[in-house]
Length: 433
Image 1 (cartoon, rainbow, N blue to C red):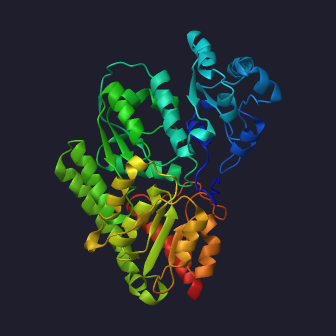
Image 2 (image 1 turned 90 degrees about the horizontal axis):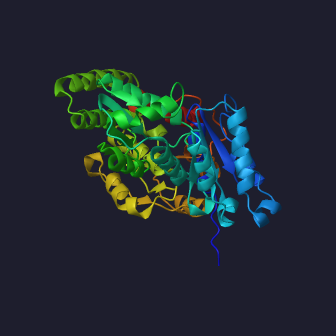
């Protein structure tokens, strides 16, 4: 009997279209049915140049399913290239196109042979999630758009791979915050996604001194591909740095890997910590008043936020973790390392993590847990009902996020930790005022 998956936190691989849409000047061309196109056209920030709601689609119908859709795809690409002025066109194939055996790669190669900047990524929904779709699109860009050469290395240039673009509501703010942190210690971030970036950033990829992956697992495969293709080493830092303790560790680790002088990096850390704790001290009475704050917490999100927020709440704020949930269908090969990271906490504290993907089962476990008072529950809109039933302090931070507008916020870094405290305690104070 087929298993029903309730309240999933990820989309199908074709949702990787959001990765393409997050790169300025890149136009996705969808070879799939109209239903897929309609589902993918919804989400945050659906206007602007190459609006996410407007993209070429072959709209496969019964005719193409029976007789094949390659001719239709060829016409679609021809017209897209003629009418829409993009820097790079990425053809994404959905389930129907791949089930009937359309050779989209061969069609795309005809345009590449004519010098057109068109590439192809296989993103059929049955192959995996939009997290994997992100990796496959980056792999297509690396293998089909970038020439395999021995490029000149630019000292201090760092390719950064962190949050899943657009699916993570805080993606743009996170990348900008990481860029600012690296700039503080004398490094230059090369980021593909968001404002002022684009194909010019793609072309800089081979010239980086190293690649930096700031995520428990997403982006590691991409960094390995870049190492194999261009010989670029990579540093895998397994969580977003939130707050003073983890951000200082992050800057130290990056500085050491980049072989930067220790003293200037340490000076940046000390100054940032002085500033951070200045604000913490101003509200110490509030933070130490346990009556208004939860003793235990749960994060039900993807591994990125489950791990990063757990580290922040334990290491910086001294809270105790109940079970945490990384719900994006983490590949099994990464799960042991992620479990180990959840045990890398201060004060001898450890945290259990579940990789359960079914929202119903996660909610039942939360409701059966003893939080020794009001729970602190951090998750998505799906957790709202469970929070109400458990009388939890509730902060939604991840997809689906229906009741908050996030344009350019971030929880990354020293300021990000302060922002997260503001958001959590704003929820707490609402209950008692």
